[in-house]
Length: 310
Image: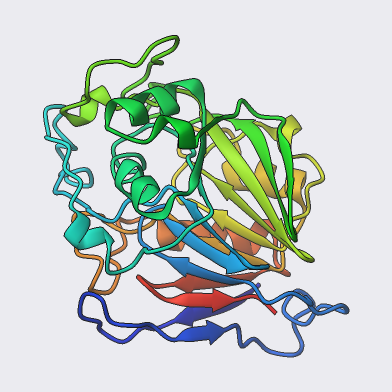
């Protein structure tokens, strides 16, 4: 496995970031594929599982959550369920001004709260489950921009496609944090993080030209849903301690991507404008990927950095 770490300059809020292309040794089979990718696509990491994907004349956001209100999630005590939900445009708007689609993987507090503001600001279509969309409407998202998906959808747009897959969330000792659904009707406005329930987890495969990008919302998946997808770029989370053979099974199903980029590895109580602080799972993931997919390039992207697969 080839390992590329993109170190970043310290940035003030609103500062522009440079685009960094992968630079890996020519001897690596995965890093120097026989057929180079022919479409220019750029991924920018906005912390946690928040990604901006640009290419083919479109901008796609995944789980955009930039407010990063303090939760204590990665402390020994964990996040208290009564932490108040906050969405702060001053922390969002310097980084996001346009988007065509917003893809929601699940309903938890570190994925959902900023989507309503971003949807209103950009006019983007929001894809999510019935629960996700009901929670978003309760938080003030525009109802006419909501697109209900269940897994199995395959959308064709001008120059790109979006596929939706049923997935599942990781657990802690076999128990799901903040489980539940909100079907049928819009609930009361969520006030605290326990009000934002998982509500079914989804995975997405975005294909722009000849570049295929896969994202999971958590450190779990359904093998039969993703068998043979063969993405070029895999955004994969550390963790999965309660998921049987988490990394080996994932790569057995997907194949060996050209690039594996860790996501959701930062302590999101730390600021987005500073280098990411590993909550403790990054090195274990690196080692697991090296064993399961040795020809993949493991690329660590820091906060606000951009990566262009070649």
